[in-house]
Image 1 (cartoon, rainbow, N blue to C red):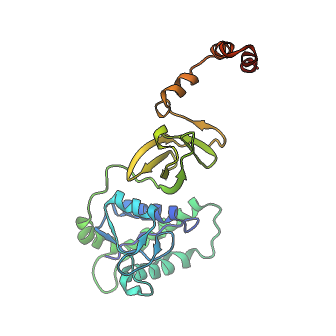
Image 2: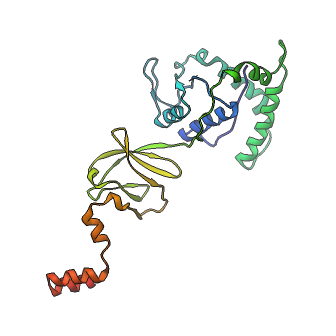
Length: 255
């Protein structure tokens, strides 16, 4: 149908690519079986006709929507001819019209884009009856699969090392994992709200994301029993235990 989605983003990072693809699915109110992206590094880390390496965040987005990613071959625009046609349409019917206007926020600019995009999709064909919207409702929409029940949330992946104190550092904040995993090499799955720790394909810890560098987030169940016991000691008990060793130790603990 050539029914087209267009939206402006601040950059071409993995977050923008993933959120843009997700918003396109929401715009179409469904998902196809296969998507054919181009090969920017934020989407395809290593281009290959047979075994492309997909960016982990984009792969996670595709898994959320249960779609297969088959990137176009490098320098083969015919692999995504519909997209190339839509780019030309958006350039003529949206960008060209807005090129002399000044916007002071991305929100305002996207409102203008949406207005022109609606006109583009409702514009009558010259050589056939109907519009892109009517053809989409007739042909494409019935073939789309339903959107997943859970909303999409962008996530990124990082590597981390667990220290001897069974904690790791992400963006300056210090998080715990179960103490038996100290010295492990783990993967972090990070969203705006959570930090998950993955090892061997399974999740070993999950924390609410904190934006306080230098602070600790330690879950009691991650600590060995004697660490939990020490952590529950009052100052008076510490001084009393020190006294059992000697007056100098008690004095040190009191200080």
